[in-house]
Amino acid sequence: MNRLGWLILVTTMLLVACSTSKGPPAPVNEISGRPVITDGVHVVKSGETLYAIAWRYGRDYREIAAINHIYSPYTIYPGQKINLSKNSIVASAPQRTNSPRVLTRGPARQQPSPHPQAASSAKFTNPKYPIYGKWVWPTIRNGLSAKAKISNKNNGIDIHGAFGQPILATAPGEVVYSGNGLRGYGELVIIKHDDRYLSAYAHNYKRLVAEGQRVTQGQKIAEMGQTDAQEVKLHFEIREDGKPVNPLRYLPTG
Image 1 (cartoon, rainbow, N blue to C red):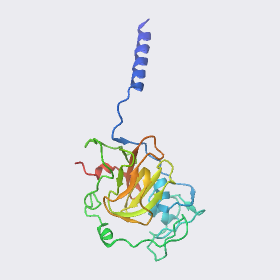
Image 2: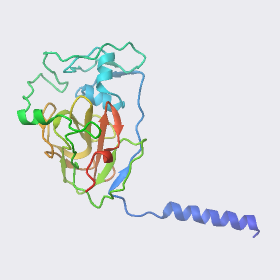
Image 3: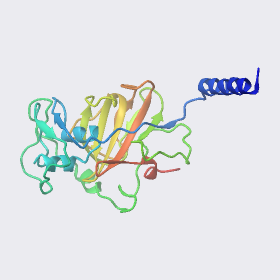
Image 4: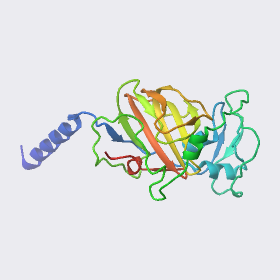
């Protein structure tokens, strides 16, 4: 065999070895980013909220609300067409009204009044690294390296654990979505912490909170599962003004 033939054979063997050698899965993995949709129309389905629609398309819920002249409490209805185009004329930022919120899951229901203590705690105390001075981990970590990083192209982190493991609210806030209507997220909970920050908890086995419910930091909101996933894990995201940020910048390293 000539030199070129040996080179091709060695290269092929190396490629095969690389493709078949797999180590154990890391406790925290990077995931592929989801595209931001800036054009088109979304038709509201039963059970959807404006927050969930904005999350699906990687947008700020306030921006979509302004484009479509939807005002707080951001009531939407099945069959309603939501314009996603950033080229549309954007109205002034929606202001809070006294109109009741109507969920698309069924008949209108009165939302519980926020607990005074929970409501008062929902304020940022650190402008550089916000959320009450400190976030907490949304579930138990198994050997997470303090040096773990996440790419700017990714939307969050995957934390592996045991089936049924408690999922906790990383900070106090209001549940603005609890359902399974977002493809790729499985049983999903989204919490609004203030006008700028939201967090999401995906692939749960069981959701334990309802939309409109106030939660405290560290409260159990779900149980770990693998809905819409190939393995048991929590997929966790934080978004600032609709844009995904690296959760590891906010979570404790100890």
